[in-house]
Image 1 (cartoon, rainbow, N blue to C red):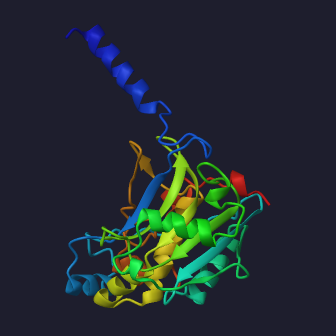
Image 2 (image 1 turned 90 degrees about the horizontal axis):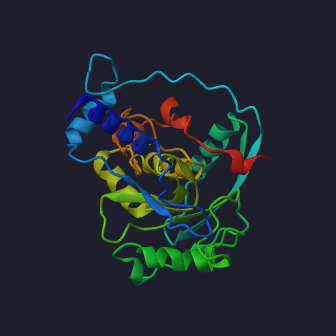
Image 3 (image 1 turned 60 degrees about the horizontal axis):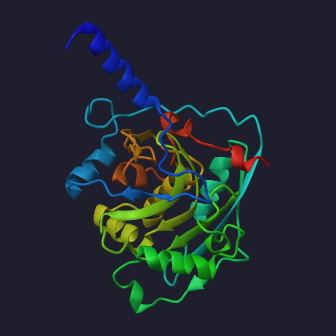
Length: 280
């Protein structure tokens, strides 16, 4: 291949790499992407405990990133979260309080809709986890917000309203502990208003790894809520989990779940947020 042909091929490849190919177009015509939160694999319990105790630069396998407090957002933002939960999986109040305080530092007001929060009776149908069909059936029945997916063909993804289901596990995927249905482009996550927290699976994982259950819950809720406001590093249309083990946008790990009352988004992920839909 001559030099001119090589140059042309490079130009074509570059152009393709920056094309705004979409994995979802908009809330009316989109096929939303299901972004999951996974458990980090291949971690022995003893190794996990040692990692928690040895948070020093002398351990090259654990990247430690200093996180300065970012400046508050120049505008005020406001959004509401409705949480419904399967019996036995009531979300922890201290986790919700932490989220409210964390986002308030960024001039983002979060309100939890306690009026419409409902307990869903436990059913034998959930013994093997919650399936996609069950998730959407529960959303249609229990989501009282204007973002109820039954109100439109494909749901409402850009409203300043979020619906979260706390439940048992994810049917057919024992390593998945949460997910968010989102819309966006090939390179950028935009928004998502439908979240599932597999609280039962997360509690079981926390027990095995000897970290507080509310620590696992906090990482899950902040990870998935982050997706709902566009926080994600996207490569070729897929999520790239954070390499900083302490960031909530990493896999669920003892390092982030055990960072009690210090859960955070690393600067790399935080800058990917999309808040234009939530201007107060």
